[in-house]
Image 1 (cartoon, rainbow, N blue to C red):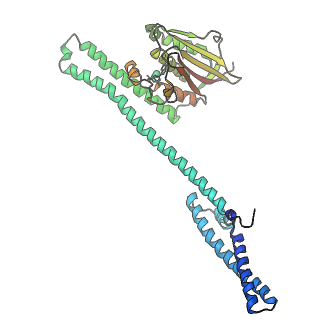
Image 2: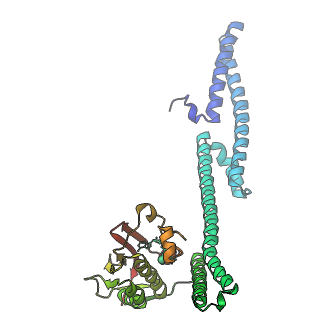
Image 3: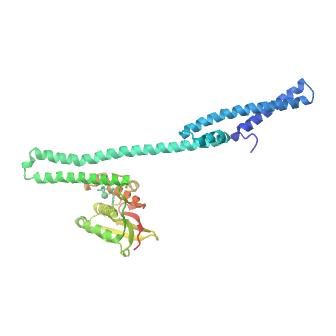
Length: 351
Ligand SMILES: Nc1ncnc2c1ncn2[C@@H]1O[C@H](COP(=O)(O)OP(=O)(O)OP(=O)(O)O)[C@@H](O)[C@H]1O
Ligand SMILES: [Mg+2]
C-alpha cells in the first residue's frame, strides 16, 4: 500500500502527512530568515509536533462524532455500556471504508425488509380481491334463484325443485370455500400440530381411489397404482392430512382429466430416508406459464374452464401447505396435451 493511498487514509496518516509537509515548508522558510543550521531543525520539530497533535486530535474528534451519529442511526437501539465502550475505543479505529461497508450492509438489509413488506402487502390485497370475487359468484347465484322462487317460481312445478337444487349447490360451494379457507388459515398459523404415524402409502391411496370411484366412473377414468410400485412402502406422516393431499391431487386429475383417461399413482423409495409419491394423469396438461403459480391460493390455469368445473383454486395451495408443514417438498411436471404429474416426498417409516 503506498503512503498516499487515499482510499484508506486514516486520521493518523492524514495528520502525519499534513504535519510533515507544513513542517518541511516552515523549516525551508526559516533557513532564509536565519542561517544557523539548528534553526530549520528546531522549526521542523516544533511545527511537526504541534500540527500533528492538533490536527490529529480535531480530526479524530470530528470523524468520530460523525461516525457515532451514523451508527446511532443505523443500530436504532440505545447504546449499552458495552456498546459505549465500542463507540469510544473501537469505532475510531474503523477506517472510513469499513464504516462505508457497514452502512452499505445496513442499507441492503433495509431494502430487503421493505421488499418483503411490499410483497406481503401485494399478496394481502390480491387475496382479499380474490376472496371477494370467489364469494360473490355463489352468493349471487343463490340470491338469483331465491329471488326468482319468491317472485312466483315457487308455485311452478316445472322449475321450483330445479331452482332450489341450484340454490343448494351454490350454498354447498360457499360451505366448501369457507371450509377450505379455514383449513388454509389453520395450516398457515401452524396451529394444528401434525400427528405422525407409520402407514403404508399404497393403502391410503387405495382408500382415496375408493372414495373417488364415483367421480372416476362418471368419466370412465381408470385409477391405478403403477406396476412395479405396489409393494407396500411405509411412510411416517400425519395420515388424515396426507389423505387430503392425495384426495386433492386425484380429484384434480379426475376433474381436469380426459374421458376414459388414466390416473396412475407411483410410489418410490428415493433413499434411506425419503419416499416419493407421484400422481399422474393423461389429461390436458398445464401450460408452462402457469406452472410456477399453480400452488398459489385461488390460482387457476384456465379460469373459464375451471370455473365451469367448479374449482376455487385452493386445493393445491392446501396440498403445498400440508407437505411443507411436514418439512417436505411438492412439485409439478406437465406438458399440454400429454398430461400432468404432481409429486411429493415424505419421510420413510420404519415398521
Ligand atoms: N391434473 C391437472 N390437470 C390439469 N390442470 C390441473 C390439474 N391439477 C390442477 N390443475 C390446474 O390447476 C388449477 C389449481 O388447482 P387447485 O386444485 O388448486 O384448484 P381447483 O381444482 O380449481 O379448485 P379446488 O381444488 O379448490 O376445488 C386448476 O384450476 C387447474 O387449472
Ligand atoms: Mg382442485
